[in-house]
Length: 239
Image 1 (cartoon, rainbow, N blue to C red):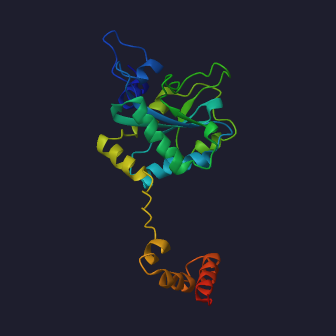
Image 2: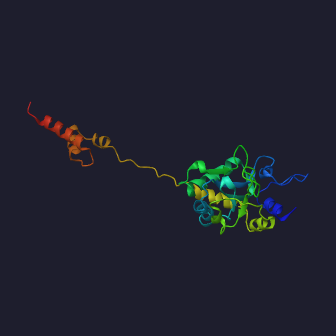
Image 3: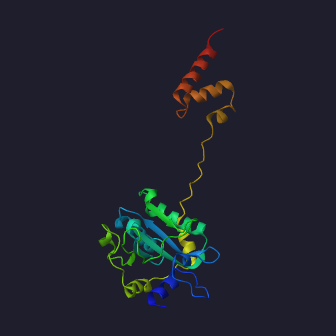
């Protein structure tokens, strides 16, 4: 097992079967359909300024370990989050959707990908992009912006270099994930206390007193105050 394989297994892959499973997309799920790999992608046009808000925000605002940054050709940029304990697809989607709403709400949803999905997972990185002949790769944060025009590599990335980048990363612990989810929840809308109804308040009085109160109450719509005045005038006319 090479260093890159070791780091991918440490961060993102399910345990290998006894027969020594290959390092491929199938290992992004456990045998019971859970995953440790949460991937948020931003498709072309590649926009590192937007994606960096997520990369920086999860560290500064949520106090989570930095996710890996990947360039993936037509799929643009990806952020790879590693979990210490696997979660369901629904739990993964909930977390990633909250990140999207917090940091990428101004970006068209059609440009954002959230993995895993019920249909499967994204392609493992690094890998050859069959449609372009280019390579996906993990990159450092200081080089990410360089790939804005072409988020891919012409040649396969060096395995030792990829392993070095991944070796600096940590997995999100269950307590850290729970705390982040709580911070990402939208604030509760305070219940609105409605003012007592004018009619409810004033109908406790005698009819004439009610009309007088309505006519002199500046909070009552003018049309109703005029009607109250007319009623009072009508009531005081000699018979």
